[in-house]
Length: 118
Image (cartoon, rainbow, N blue to C red; front, side, top):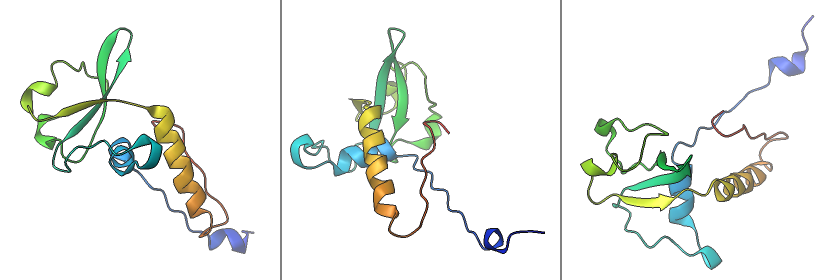
């Protein structure tokens, strides 16, 4: 026998591939906006084992370059000279995502966040 309430459940999974860029471009108040024009592509980098690695890009980065997470940074900026490199702030991304989830709770009885990379 199946539970009739579980048959009517609907699930929505959101994937936010440009979360770091969206957060940075919308930041206001004490963190101030990044001050970059919307057409300037962003690349988010962080130091991993002493080397700068590409962590995320925004929608302005050309997809034909085939960039991937964790690639060494210095070789990645060559194809797009106007690219702005920004330090990645995973704690700020998580805080912003939690605020989004808190805002969604008014539409549903259950909201859950997945782990980074999940």
